[in-house]
Length: 157
Image (cartoon, rainbow, N blue to C red; front, side, top):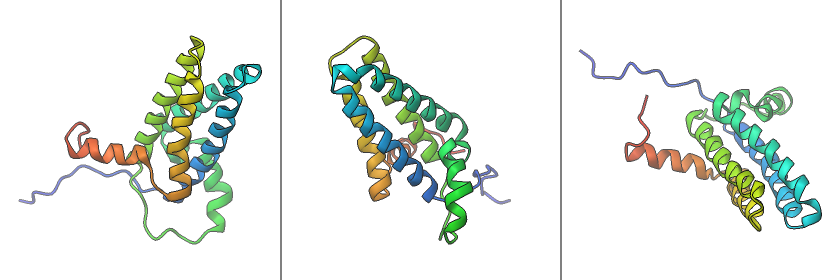
């Protein structure tokens, strides 16, 4: 009798897709930070962060392959690239979207309660994570997923 697991791993995704999305997200978050630093544009920052939060919610619930940025990547960018050397497990990037959702959600709450610079700080934290992924292929949320799985807080399917 074989001792191998019968659990099915989700189909892999092109690892360049989440990086493409992180590039767009980091740009939007940087704009959000700058808008949030000026009282005259704070409302615009709030609504931009709200839109980004919705995008994080889509990524956290549906995954990167069905995220609007993932669809743009699949339709317009991916056909122009060579095949990836290997595919990536979609679960860590999906978890990273959840982390982004939480951080952006905290920013919205802080902004709604007019906590000084709360929205800017939350958007800046999310920007750092997105920028690290876009520029250096280092996904903080993915690393958090791996660490939580290693210590047993996230069960392997």
